[in-house]
Image (cartoon, rainbow, N blue to C red; front, side, top):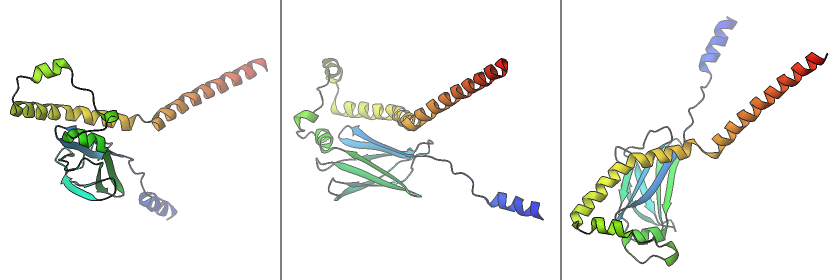
Length: 192
């Protein structure tokens, strides 16, 4: 009877949850803002409503993530943009892009300190003979090709954070301590 009760209690005990973090990022994409939302375990947020707010909390608009967890938003004001998405179960994604970056993206005058350097002469020469449509197609192609790389970089950043590094160092120091303890015990036994 007691064994059965212990077995039932063991089966009803809560199992540890698999920990994961929300990963999210935004970056310029032509005259748009492109972003991604998902979890550190590689599951991306599909069909997630992303609300866009300015720095004061006023709603600017909204967009939805695609099948790969990416979204595209065209800014209408050169102000700070804050992107929020509720992934459920207490997981919230919030990413922002500064007003200077948005102004530069829109072709507006950005503050001098935040202005990006001009593209190299080689890059200008390479795209000089291209039509606007060809440039747009080239930008779209590059965006598609860089998506997996961006996902891998974001996952790597989240996987190898400070806590993981410090934990690894703790294991190493613990193993050295155990080694020194065993060596000291052997030395004491040999001298006795």
